[in-house]
Image (cartoon, rainbow, N blue to C red; front, side):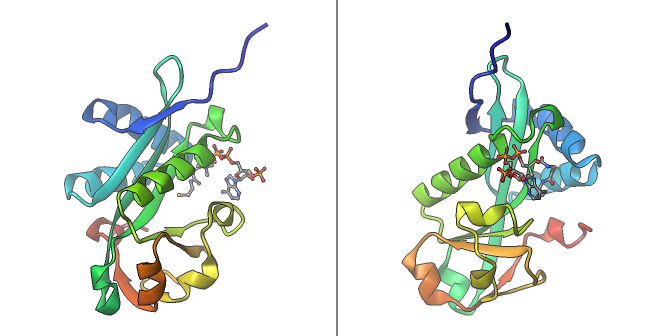
Length: 175
Ligand SMILES: CC(C)(COP(=O)(O)OP(=O)(O)OC[C@H]1O[C@@H](n2cnc3c(N)ncnc32)[C@H](O)[C@@H]1OP(=O)(O)O)[C@@H](O)C(=O)NCCC(=O)NCCS
């Protein structure tokens, strides 16, 4: 009888992980575009947090990236980031790895003093982590609609809303 792998370890990504990360992203999305986006975010210094899920054999099976978002007006003083993209290897999806990456990422951001986290994602998935499409209506930017969701991690964020935001440059070219 085979035993299921232990819950993957979640740790910060290192330069040695980059090829594995690209592979996980490309296989999860079935396309190279999101892996290129992560490379560009990384090389322009826009990544706030990048973590991987590694199974007990040392294989990277999941990845999450958060990049810097700039607020204007009252949002100028807030630390704002955007969750994108998140990927789990197709053979390991629906096993809780994505949820573990999101929870660990939010915890690390909270610990680091982040005020607000944004995501453009499925409205059926992200609210379980506290993301709220209603709150995101107070965040003006290029993405609007039910997929655009926000999670306030500080009172300062709630007090500053409504605000306007700009995403890292590589998102402009991303379709
Ligand atoms: C989205 C993704 C990261 C989730 O990771 P995961 O490890 O499979 O997710 P978990 O096991 O933690 O959670 C599974 C839950 O997420 C839900 N879920 C996963 N992907 C979803 C999606 N695209 N839309 C709606 N719900 C989704 C499942 O229905 C399941 O819900 P349940 O617990 O109510 O059954 C993974 O499916 C993936 O890599 N998908 C391809 C890339 C992608 O679409 N990324 C998101 C956009 S940036």
